[in-house]
Image 1 (tube, helix red, strand yellow):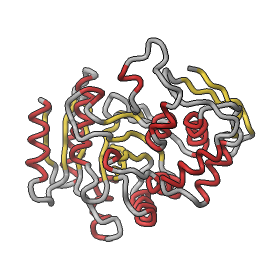
Image 2: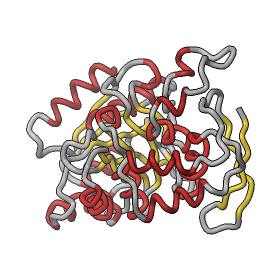
Image 3: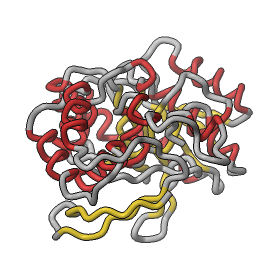
Image 4: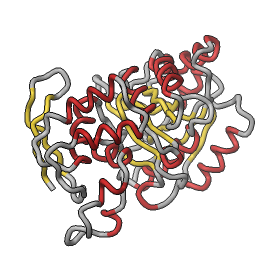
Length: 313
């Protein structure tokens, strides 16, 4: 499906916005804003961010399905830059390959996310190594080692920034995915310790942020980790959360880019083991009730059951 709608892009003038999607169901409406206002409120969004999204949605060409209008608005307000199937390896301005260092609050799912990224990279045919600097949490190293063994990938532990830098430098072209200890970002000792690793290695720090937090707590936490040079965010626990407002609020307030999303507890399995790329359409699907996505009745001709499910892959 190709839908074109006129919509202002961030600080630019209104222009054509084009999005492609195989099967994005929903009955087109002449005014999607009232439906979206209710949906945003259901997600816990009623303030400035909600108004900005609704304003963006008001520019779309109608009739249009509310889900697609929301996707257009999300693309206007937020940036999306998935890590990709290479497990997060990115190219710097100097053409150097960098590893990915997962950071975040305790219990956000960094270790499992690291394993999911490794599984996805391995499925894509890449060499991958799991590294960890999580030497404080009881059982943290053993947990990652168990996951690494199950995936058939190597795992190494670094005790200090110099050792981690040496491990990354000696990766021999393999993708390096680094797990870290969950820290209290408001504790200067914890934050400074993690900053030493971030400053010492050629790795991109990526925030692993759980959905379902209080909005104020989520915003303050995101701001604190953004000060540690995080630019992108992986969202976890989406399968256990009904409201995604706090995730949108923290990305908006801390100027973070949406990357990937964890949609199930599985690590090895179909669709990359529960880790999917996050784009405007995927985020709109996660935020809207299934009724709005499927109210046009039977699936379109040729669509499979997998295509008809709300999916982020």
